[in-house]
Image 1 (spheres, rainbow, N blue to C red):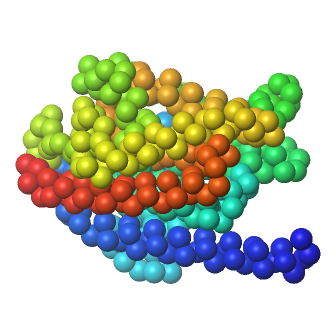
Image 2: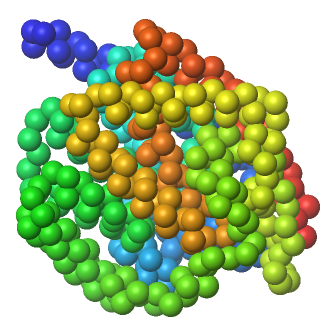
Length: 407
C-alpha cells in the first residue's frame, strides 16, 4: 500500500476502535448505576463474587488506607493511586465517582488494545469488529470493568503482552520492549507474570530470557520498596504471602468441572447468579456462580455458550494450522495453561478471575477466522455477542437486585 492508503487505513481503524470504546463506556455506565451504595462500604467486602471492592476502592483514592494486598499486587498502589488522584484534579468527584471513572478509562483502553490485537493477528476490520463486540458483551468485561478493582488493569497488562507477542510475528522486537511487557505483567498481579516469562522464553534463548526476566523483577522489586515508604502497610511481594495458602483446594469451590466452567464459559456468558450466606455479620450476603450450571442464566446464555464453544474450538484449529503464528500460540498457550493450573487449586470463586481469562480466551477465539470459511466466524461472533449481551445484562440486573436485599 502507498503511504496515503496506509494512513487512511489507520485512520479508519482508529475511528472504529474509538467507537467501540465509546460503546463500551456507555454500557458500563448503564450497568454500574444499578449497583447499591452499600457494596462499596466495609460490609460489602466479598459480596461481589468474593471481590474486595471496599478495600480496592480505598486503595485507589487514599494513600493512608491499608495497602497490605500489595503482597500479591506488587506495585498496584503506586501505579493506580497517583493516576486516580490526577484524574480527580482534572475531573473532581467523590471517591467512588473518580474510581469508577478510572475503571472506565481502563476499560476503554482495553477495548482499543483488543481491537489492535485483532488487527495484528491478521483479522480484517469486520472480524475485528465482531470479536471486539463479543469481548464487550462478555461477562468478564461487564462484571469486572464496571467496578473499581485491580482485575481490569491486570487484564490490560495481559493484553499488552499478547500485543507484543503478535507484533513480534511481523517484525523483531527489542529487549527493552520485552522487559517493559514483563514489568507490566508482574506489576498488578504477581501470578500474571507468567505471561511476561512466557514471552521472554519464546522470543529469546534461555540465558537472554532469564536476564530479561531478572531485570523486570528487579525493577518491580525496587519500585515496591519505594511504595512501602509511601503507602500505609504496603507489603513486599517478593517475601511471599502465607495468607494465600488459605485459598488452596477449598471444598466450597466444587469439582474440577465447576472450576473449568468458571475459566472457559462463565467469562463469556454468566450462569444463574445465586446469593450465599455471609460468614459473619454485618457483612452483606455474597453473590456466587461457582456451582451454577453453565448457561443456566437464560436461554440466550445457553445459546451463546454453544456458539462460543464452536468459536473456541475453531480458534484452536485455526491457530494450529497457522505455522507463522506458532510462536504467538506458545506465549498464549503457556500463559493460559499456567492460569488453568493455578485456578484448579486456588480460589473459591473462579469467576473472580474472569477478566484475567478474557484476553487469553478472546485471542484464541479470533483464530476461528482462519478455520471457518469466509466471514462466518465474524457473523458467529456477532450473534454470540448479541446473545451474551442479553444474558449478561439480565444477570447483572439480577445481581444488583439481590444485593439490595443481601442482608
